[in-house]
Image (cartoon, rainbow, N blue to C red; front, top):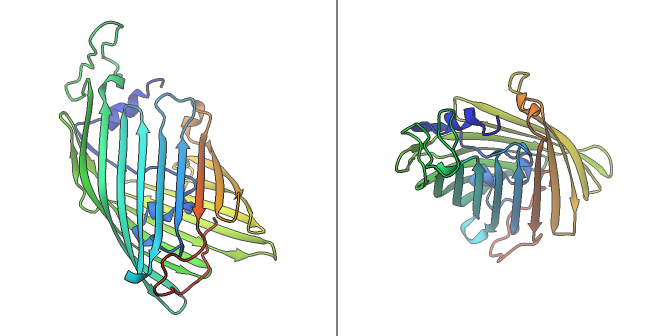
Length: 320
């Protein structure tokens, strides 16, 4: 397990087809990541930065970082956003940069947004870090994987990608469906080809007042490439609009269960929110790792920008 041999052999086949979705426990803090239609729905400048280290103390385990920003564009009746993300797993790395635009249509009880996005995905593979059962890795000798499909040095390639989505936001409820990698483009490396599979994301969130100073915010994220499906279900309680805490579960059955998570955070100021999540593995990987850590820092200006035509203001049911 030290070199995650089985994972490498599956991940670096000659023609890659995988879900290629970065995993985040605090998914409710950044809907723009899954759905370009969310751009501008915070009705102010919103900047979110996140870092996740998954399966700590397991060599080659995933490490992910992202920064996203979006704001309303009242002149065009919608919003714009940008996101940059980096995800490293073993000898491989995914990097991407995307732009998003959403058109917002006020309805009787909320807002319906339709969004489009596009950008570039880069895939990098470091053959020097790959280890195979039959390879030769003696000190001072030339690396030999004994597999002609695997590279020895560093390889990289890029491809364009396109996204689309719809998002509905009301006073107590929000829901959206986003699709990433619409064209399913391939990324060609000198020795390998990686396929960008089309991924579908469904997100649902709600807000319930329990008392004067306490509210409940359930959230759901379902992601699928029509071959594999993963779900995240979270339950967050917020106290006096400043402190929040809760838990989440990843999986939809005993066979697909991946982790239980503890979530907490608070507002550092009127504009800045800090959140943290710790995943407790419940799959077989629990024997070889000490959990996963995730931290998110979010800034919201909390006032309109460049107002030409004021939008219809509604309560945002998101937890944070």
